[in-house]
Image (cartoon, rainbow, N blue to C red; front, side, top):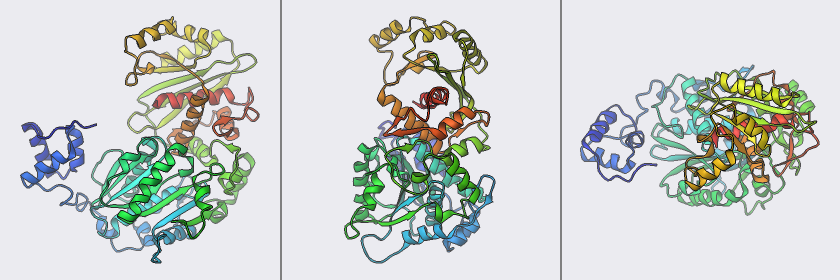
Length: 516
C-alpha cells in the first residue's frame, strides 16, 4: 500500500524525470517510490513531462502496428496461434468464433456485449478470453484510455496468472510490452488489471471508463462474494457499456451459472451459450482424450457434459493431467513440507514442495504414502528437512507427540504449546507475523472450515496451472482423480486409507501452507 504523500523529495523528482523519459508508466514509478499515483501525474504535468496517458508507451514496440485493422482470425494468425502440450499450434475453432461473434453481436438491446458462457473444462475458454481482450486493445485505437478488469477466484495470484497469459501472447508473437507489475499490463493505451473476487469488491468500483470485464470460473467463487461482484459489474453496464464475458463450468445446483441459465429470456441481461465437450470433439479434444477421461474421471458428467450434480469430483481431470504432463521449468527459491501422520492401519503421508517466490509456481519433489515405523519417518523427514533447507514443516495438529519429536530435531522449542501461548501474550504472534515465521514445525488444525479451505486452494492452484508433479507420484495422481466432495467435505469412500487420503492431505497442507 502506498503512503499518502502529497509532494516529492528532490531525489524522487529526479527519478520521476529519468523514468518518464524512459517511458516507464507513472503507475510503476509511483509504486516504486511508494507515493500516490496522482502525485507523480501532477508533477509530470507541472514540469510538462508526458506520462503514458499522453504518450503511448507501447507505440514504439516493434510489430504492434501489424495487428491493426485485422479481423479476429487474421489477428490470431499474426500474433501466433494458441498451443496445447503435445499438439503444437491449434487453429481458432468454429465454436470459438461462435463465442467471439456472440460477444460482438449488436442487436440494439440490453444483451449487447454481455455473454454468459457455460463451457466444458478444457475447451480453451480462458485462453480465448485473453485473446479477445488482446485483440480489442490492438485492432485499433478506439479503446485507448479505457480500463479492462479480470476477476477470478479468491487469490490475487489467480488473476495475475491470466494477466501473465496476456503478456505471453504478445511475447510469443515477438512483441515485447513495457514491463509492468504482476497484476496489470498496459497495451496500446488500455490498462488491464486483475482482481480476486474474494474481499476486493470495492477495488473494482469508481472507474471512469471500463471497456471489458472478464469473469472466470464464476460458479466456483465463494457464495458470499457473488452478489457484491455482480453489483459492481452490473453498475458498469449503464455507465460505460463494457464488453462482459462471464465464463464457468458447472459447480453445483443453484450455483451462479445455474441461476443465470434459469432466468427468463425476457428478464436476463445475458446472451447465453452452453457448450459441452462435443463442441470440441475431434478438435481441441481428440477421441483418445475423451476415452481416457471417461475411464478415470468421476466428474465427466459435470465437467464435460455440463450436468450439475451435488456430488462432485474435486479436481478437474485436465488440471491434474497438466500438473503431471507439463514441462514447466521451475526453479524453487524455498521449500516446505507437510506430514499427515497415520494411525494404524493408516499410512503416513508426506509432501515436499519447492516454490518459486517470483512467480508462485510450485514443484512437487516428493509426495507419497509410507508404511514405516514412526522412528523411520522421523529420520526420513529430518533428512529431507536438512537436504533441502526446508523453511516449514506442516503437521496435523492432532498428533502432538509426533510434532514434539520433529521439533526436537530442529531449532524449535519442544514444548511448543507453551511457546505459542507466550508468543500470543507478548503479541509477537499476530496477523502480520504468523506461526510459519516463528517456527519450523507448524501445527495445522484440521477443522471443518480449514479442511474446506485447503481443498479449495489446492484445486485453484491446479486449475491455474501453478503446480508441476513428477510422474512417479502415482498414489497422489490416483487420489486427485478419485477425490469427491459434497460442498467441500471429502467423501471417505473413494479415498479410504491406503488409497491416497493421507498423501492428498499432505499435498493440500503443503500447497496451502506455502501461500497462507
